[in-house]
Length: 272
Image 1 (cartoon, rainbow, N blue to C red):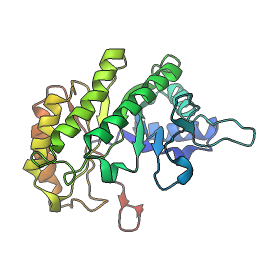
Image 2 (spheres, rainbow, N blue to C red):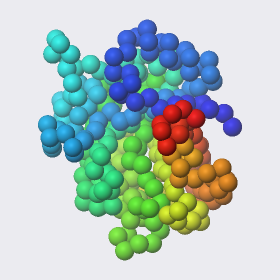
Image 3 (cartoon, rainbow, N blue to C red):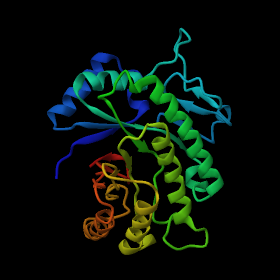
């Protein structure tokens, strides 16, 4: 196994200049990494009253219902997406561009009406991101990252909310849009799991259903979190969970199976 990529959050890089981006990418390359996931590029926080009804972006947007997160002293909106892609292109780094996220996901994620509305929002976002950056940075703009973190408590193979179809149809709504508009790139998602909320076999069955019915295909990336840092799994049981998920992935030819290693201790958020 090799560590060949990492996540970068907007709040960490919001004030970086090109020199700092170059230093970061050169360090990543020295460590053998080739991929970066920049996510999310837009988010909604329900606890901020000024954000009510507005999704904030980390790049200058002209979409209705969206607004740039902040402006500098000269009234300009810093463009984190451009800075990341521009410097990634120079460094030979491939970027998975994350779309939208909302903190209401944790309480409303199993609502088909709510989740489908978020997918429609994400599709509009993807269109704008593509038009702004894809032609300028074709080597760096490599894939899409689905920011919605699925877990085995909220989503199950069988439940009265039919959550497996809510999840499957949401992913399909996004992938169908990419296919229809010519924006289909490698698509990555990174779910998590808690051994106390289900079984490895049950979770694998859920994902087997999603893989078959959502439009995921060869070259897409299933990259579950290892859940050890956050405490959902531990060193004595993670192998069983990943073994069962491997079986589900194998039923979708060409689907890639990666692991999202949590390099932190969730008890105090220190490095692991």
